[in-house]
Amino acid sequence: MNHIENKTKLKRTLGWKTYALYGLGNILGAGIYVLVGEVAKEAGNGAIWSFLIAGIVAAFTAVTYTALAKKYPVSAGEAIYAKRAFGSKKLSLMVGLTLAFSGVVSAGVLLNGFANYASELFDISRYIYIIVGLLLFLAVAIKGIAESARIAVLLTIVEFLGLLLVILVSLFSADFLTNATSVLTSSFDGGGLSIFFGTFLAFYAFIGFEDMVNIAEEVKNPKVNLKKGMLSALAVSSVLYVLIAIVALSVIPAATLGESNAPLADVFKTATGSTLPIITIIGVFAIINGVLAQIIMSSRVLYGLSSEKLIPNWFGRVHSRFQTPVNASAFVAALMLLVALIFPLAILANITSFALLIIFSIVQLSALRLRHQIRLPNSVPIIGLILNTAIMLIQIFQWL
Image 1 (cartoon, rainbow, N blue to C red):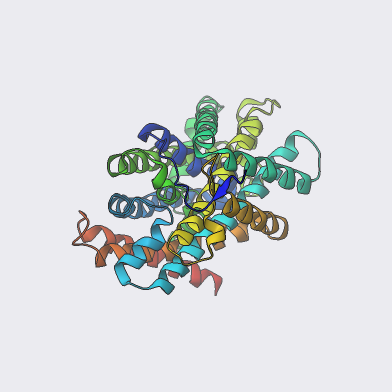
Image 2: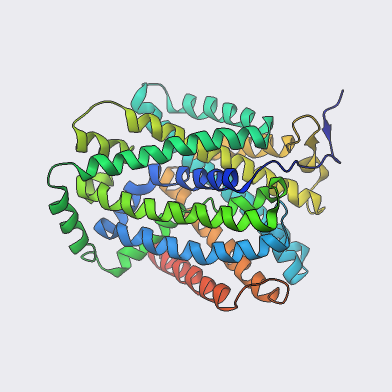
């Protein structure tokens, strides 16, 4: 019996709490365990403000997303918003493919981070970790969104507890208050420009909230649950990120933190004097969560583009038993493997952030064009567009 069909619909199985935890796991796994050291290398103690500014930028975009997603609760949401706003299939296709590309590149970041953390546990080739890990994640993604979401919820709880553990042990470490005060008072010493350079990288750590709209077809009562789930996930992650930046820089100097392959694991070891690989293990689980979410997001984008007849029907084929876009999932996993094996972590994070800021700017413009169809003050997409553009210009200035 052929279990792959074009007409099978995606199944609505997610309530808002599961949806929020799925999104939170995607956000947390997408950055803080991997990039807190890279942000510290760029911004020094100003990394605290880099994460805060990045969270504010993400918040304006998230509010716009929720308004559009309520009107168009479908996969490949960003591409659909652009198509409805500007009536251009070419623009819609460009947005969708860029979004899928960002997911592939983001997974490359995470798979490299996964290999870094896992190598702390067992001295095995990073290539083996990347290949075997990706195949396992793909199998889970194809099995079904409900199964993937349940695993994501479990992993989210684990990684959330891991971050709380890092915060708690750091709070009780020697001279924490003195060190924390020094970090805060010197956080502007590197200058505002370094903070904004760090913001560009820190923005990657918030990536994940936008992926939530791409499983909108699998959420119960999307007009209510999309907004509750997305904003809850973003609020919790923002608070955690700022706290983690403060405690990490209070335990390990920014320059040292920036050279670490497993930064939060090193923070835990320094704060406790313990060699137990607790945070290393949790970091592995956190990154698994992020990779799984990127496979799901990218495959749903391709599925949505296929549904809109913008790319071949092959990408839209859904497994009649598992009700997941199996062809699209396998395709993006193959691309993720190539990207992870070829490019270094920091370059991949920069590419992902820049690509998504372009997408977010188009989403804000789409909201302005569709303002009569959605309930959203014009000030929200306008401010969001200005912030997105400013960060992109600053990054272009750094590259030049």
